[in-house]
Length: 65
Image (cartoon, rainbow, N blue to C red; front, side, top):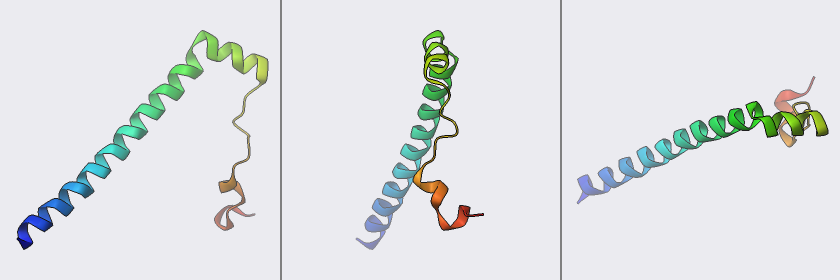
């Protein structure tokens, strides 16, 4: 029974890690696809780039100057 519990925990950890990796790949592909598309370039010209947009992480204690 103890061995089964260990296998279940390992399976859950590996599954979560795989899902996080898959999320990162899909997010990067979608972001690059939208930015390089004609519509993405049009919206960038119309609204300007938002790369300098401040997030709550910019105000984090580790990022203070």
